[in-house]
Image (cartoon, rainbow, N blue to C red; front, side, top):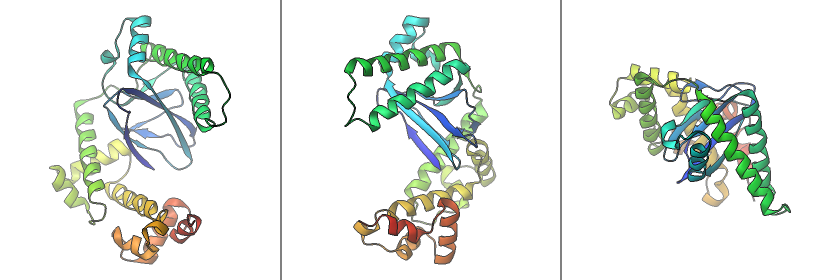
Length: 261
């Protein structure tokens, strides 16, 4: 799965890998068990989450984290960079982050039935903010950014934007490279470096993801499997079904059937 996102306005987001049969990749960096993905307000990231790998995330108010950083280390959040990246935390700190995130997600999932007090919720929030603050002050960026890596990341983001806006247009690699203003070789290398996948694999994957999204809403949209396949440039229904099954582990007809109301 390819995920691209940003932290909500005024919020600082972080994510951890919960099931790491194959490590997730953020901006080309393979995440280890003790590393935490951090996303500053306004930053965005491209994350590749391989099959059977779980990624959990939460967001906290950036101003509260800023206050904690100033209180514990006299360093404002602005001094720790303004980009999405992976940070090395100590094993103990990373373990605490995992536990607190699981607890926070559990609270959200059980919101309607949750009977705990507001004091318990605040205690969890305070513990999460404190742990993140100390982790950022003690830790370090997992890999110092370079000019070349920064350029490749920008090429990938530009290409991802173009693909998203032309999913139904049958975008090919050459067209995409021209739209991004770089050579095909440069763009291919950027995708391998940043997402550890070939450019054509990304384009095909996004088209399949979009097709799956429509299949889940076929009844409301009045569409068929063949119509969805054609909409996203798959002219051979049998090849579409094979690719879809390889990607999602089920046939497109199964997806359509399981989402009928």
